[in-house]
Image (cartoon, rainbow, N blue to C red; front, side):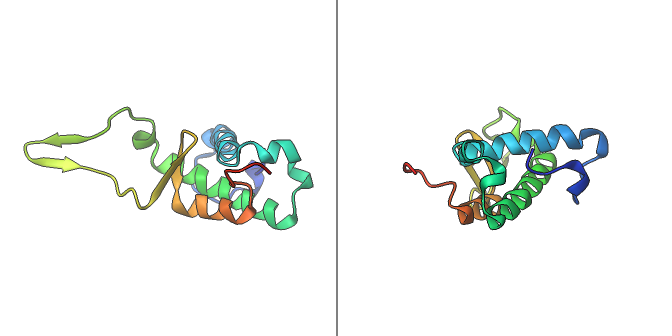
Length: 118
């Protein structure tokens, strides 16, 4: 895990924290094409490690706050002329992972989200 529960400073309840952080780490691995796993977290630069820890925390909070929407199979909703849609400018979906632009922007700074071969 890239962020230990003791280093977490968000709002996820303690009884859900470890599983939420593990899921966030798996999602971050997907967004970075498993480059963190390949290189080894300890072999990354201090800057990359700091950014990844921040991204894990933000992504865990994002997933916790939006769990019903992220995990839903519902594509759209309308009833009696009232409809609901999502602002796609605030979210990113890559490799089957939905996260905030903030999280993805942080990960882009690490150089680990590059789509080409490294």
